[in-house]
Image 1: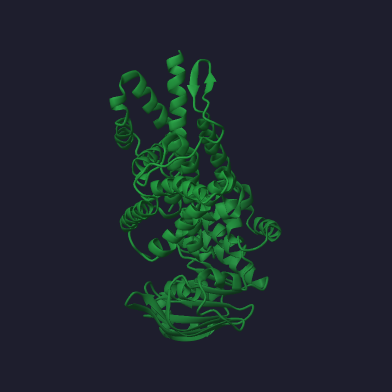
Image 2: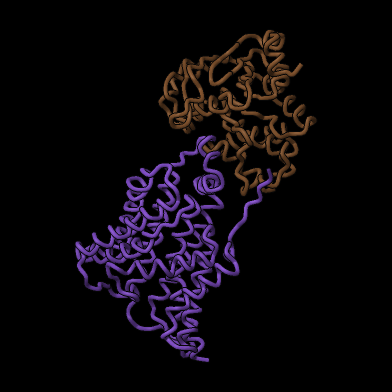
Length: 290
Length: 233
């Protein structure tokens, strides 16, 4: 029973991390029908920039906020300077641009921060939290809290704000959005900024657990992508649920089968989803009558 | 109100609209008729800015729009109901309408949406339905309502009768006439020449991207060549 609880807690922590990465994929896909393979790099930037700002002597709160803002700005630049330039490019071209951007960001991080692992202390001390005999790092609670915050924020954004509705409209019919006067280029920038900021927030809260490194984004992007696929790519909430499913599956597979197979779980899930439910668990199919 | 001079536009190297000049006076209903491929839709898209223009100018009430992006043209008062409705299919009827007023204040949108519901009662009944699930006629009404939510000074309609049953065509035409009676300035593009000429004040006939004929709608209707080519008798 304690084992089960232990796997459950570690699965939730992992899952929250994957969810935070996956949300960014879903947001970008929702706005531009493209996959942003630089999404993992925004997570890396979140942790790395926090480390950087801490070494400048900033307090943790400011360093973390600065890292999120910096990532959002880099996201805006990526959209404006690289993706918006490829105006009528196919989705495949845009995907390749993001792969290139990811390489560039990894290279830049390596130059600025070196090849070492970096970290900073957990926000609420290093003492583990005890839950019915199972132990959990206190930092995990921050990760879960970040995921909850992002979930609520995204719900509010799409359900209540005009900007959120304009994003929905752009996804639903980009031509019509242009015709009725929605500033589509600006919407796309907003989506990149949002998903970069969310990714970076994930990086900020996970770094005391996972440590950070210039290549941290590569495996994380794979897991986040898997989370988004499980959720159906178009749905940010789907990506969050997908992340939790993936994290729990990994934790239980690692605990009850063998840690050796833990890393394979993501691939098994992706393949199974593509075969049995390619639209994902929450993929939405618009009704179109012609 | 709307003054187009020597407008040229197209897709890449294909020129679909060549040196078109036309005017729409305040409160006027002007029709542009022509066959499939005559450049009617491209003309509207070039006026609204969703297609680049290669030359010429677009002015609205004295304001030069030629260099503005589509969003700025909508803010200046130019609304375009594109061919094939182009709704946000996955969004609700109400969301579609509100998006039409996304550059205006929420209070203005709240007031105007009631006006649209009074004009199109069926949209009020179905305000929570997905736009993509409406029937063709309802979709056309929603497309019209969405454009009206921008409180435009000039309304451009691209083939509003396309794909509708004759009864619905008559209904849409009645709505357009009502809009005109309320003082809306309208530029109507139609392949259904007879229907368009029946409600228009003036008309332009577009042939291979050029204006082949212009004049009062009744004159165009009586023109023997137009009768032959477009009216089918």
